Length: 139
Image (tube, rainbow, N blue to C red; front, side, top):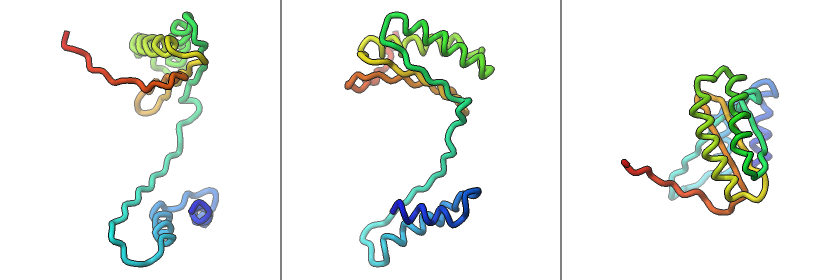
């Protein structure tokens, strides 16, 4: 499948992406003709990625100083992106999630800020437990 799709993609050349419809048709051709007892749904999407200048990524040692360092790094990234108005909220968010990650991590924690149509903050640690979603009480 991968080889066939790569061949289809090369038909338009390196400077143009192939039409998604042609790629979908190629996948359906691979399945071959015949009666199908079930409908087929195929979703194709093109993602060009996020520009490296819109990504800030750091490793933080799991130590008490990590939340403070994370706040400073986030503030610098926001300043570079012209988003100083978000500094207070982002620093609070980063401080909370990094503090929580550091509490359970044994290896470096990752912090990533992504600037797209929204500002996304991602924190990763080596804890095998999945986070639990909680709802705040009215109080």
